[in-house]
Length: 544
Image 1 (cartoon, rainbow, N blue to C red):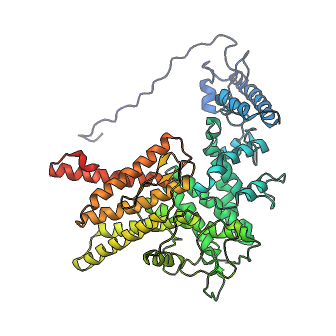
Image 2: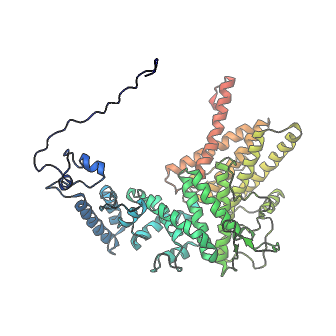
């Protein structure tokens, strides 16, 4: 050994002293293989190392326990499917035996084949079924999701979708919604379920939805319904991951929805432009032709589908700080949106001779023309509010990066002009009378606006507009505009009070952007408190 080098320390391994088992106390597996057994229960050391089933004499085997549990599960499923069972009975079933019901382990038989966890969760769960649950569970999942569907970007006609989903046709049949969309809806139904036992099995439907989406994207170009269903599934998956704060996954599925919608030309519906070549799919490099819609409902689904993708893209970009490098962004200068604003399409509100051109730019021009409109609220109000917030967020980012002296005055004038746009748009939103929750309102608007907690989209629209107004006032306050800071703080308080009030009254599930809006409002107070600490001024009355 070289001089100066320290000897390598010996590694000591502690060995449990062997204990002589009495005759007949070893497990059956060790007896069969004639190997030493330490008698540890429920699984001895030898079976643990060999990853084998351990069974002792006089006790029911693990396989027997699983068989008994599956038998109980099947009996429960039959009870659920019986027509005389009521809703309360179903709820009591889930709540009384939730732990035992959904703790079913993997398959009892051992195999060296690649038997994935997904196949285990589908093949060995009678309640969730495979490839889809029973009709009674499907109905329960649909009823959990559809009342709040529009809040999460569902743009298909609800009655048509529900009728098709409940058809007595095989899973994957063309008369029913696509397999990816159905599994995504089942995922949302489990996610929004008030029953813990269903929520604990979200991963089953999530795995199925992800597998089906990956299969359906290449084949979506061959069917109009298929491509719309795939876009819908991608929007809902993106919103689901957005809600779970898994932003990378949310962005991934949003990119798929954006690419498919652009490839199908959904941003050019009723456009007055002349296109010399068909649209080419970004994903498959294949030409996609969408035939004319069969009726106003199908055309409305396409229009609303584009705006669902557009709004989700804008809101996720705001949450990510506009720093994400999406490969299928809507910010490309070559992407002009001519599609008309969404509306109640089943009533035939689109004239046959109506064409669109630069829809968003036209909205900004009309809003800046001081044209007075009667207060109203329609499906387009939400999309327009998203447009305004996205523009203001871009202005905020530009201001944070810094401006030279020449651009400073122009930028401040733009902020004042945009403040007027937001104020006029807010005045065009009709309040809902006799409600319980006060929505965020602009201090410059007369009176207070009220929105019922069941009307989640109007609430969210008011929150988006208020947040846009708050950000403009924050910029103007930094520019030294009088009273801008107080208006900013007052609006931030309204945003937080609205979200808090909705939570206390048990309002419907809100879009995940609500968390981002709340964080924006809280940052106003954080920035102001930090400024007070620096200046040594701790008068909290200044915060309203």
